[in-house]
Length: 481
Image 1 (cartoon, rainbow, N blue to C red):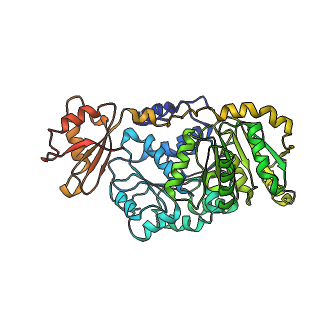
Image 2: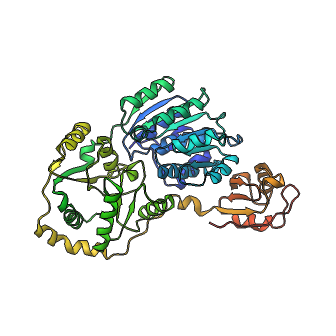
């Protein structure tokens, strides 16, 4: 970690205030190297392992540089998965809360019409998966002529998932005069080619982990027959007794089977894979993030950039087919300077996969034996004690930030010719309220939502029951969460 503080970057008071509320104290290495350069509006290609704080590295300068007055999107952030798009949107909203930065997320398996309606409103930042962004471009439902900043997040995963062609098509639709920031855990040749083709003299930044990946994360491997894997998993969970653990299966079927067997053994767990409804995937991820259960069984979809604090263990029930996936999976643990364990199961005929992975990560994974019957028996009491303890539900990182925010609902919008400036002008004139107390304003055809900050919500709610907006007395309520 650096000894710098976010105050050293000449950030606005609104951004500094949001970071303090979110508990950001000092920048990580990637933030320390990227933020000052990004603020000078230079193209940057960043190679940094997962868990290094990349979202804040691009999210903070973007929130600083976008202008609130402009109604069209000024920044486009491309991510490989829907979960990551939703997470980045939330982070951008949090960083830009006091600047009233409005972010929208667009991804598949969600109503196109709903996204289209959101993009019609004032939107500063759009976060999306390449396929859905291209859909919006194809139907002229997203305006790109004011985009000044492009972020390509998890670029190597875009390549692995076959999105690079779609990314190129999107880039070709963007204004040439823009700043491009590319982030990747690894830099394969195709990603490097993308940098040279679409970026202007990019500054290369490579972040070395504080300790090598092999020491920050304890990597180990057990050779086991396929039929014996589940019994081994059960023993490993008892002996290791993890606080929070992701178990990776290779296919949706593997994940369903592992999850079913764990539940039959009485383990509280969740599962996530691409065959599930998007709403269910979000629900499971949020419950796991809050610590409602300790074991998450997942396909690689959960390895792609999802930020969950304090995952102590990653277990590769099946070795990944792609060597790069090993880095993304194991990068879920040992984040932000903490240590973690990555335990892999390999069948005797998987030497080829293993050799490729070890060649790629640059070190030999330590071989270990399966736990003995005595060892399992010895650890059983501690495991059962933890299993029978009520989980401590973690607070959302934005809870402090949102504590003093009240969202108000007004029964008037675009069809009554109302604009954001009308609400700002009216509310800021109320006694005891200033423009700094007004947060994100969302104007729809028939209704408007206004975030009131700094604990001033009840005061504004009471006053607006008898105050007109542009000559119209609107009904006003506390909005449903």
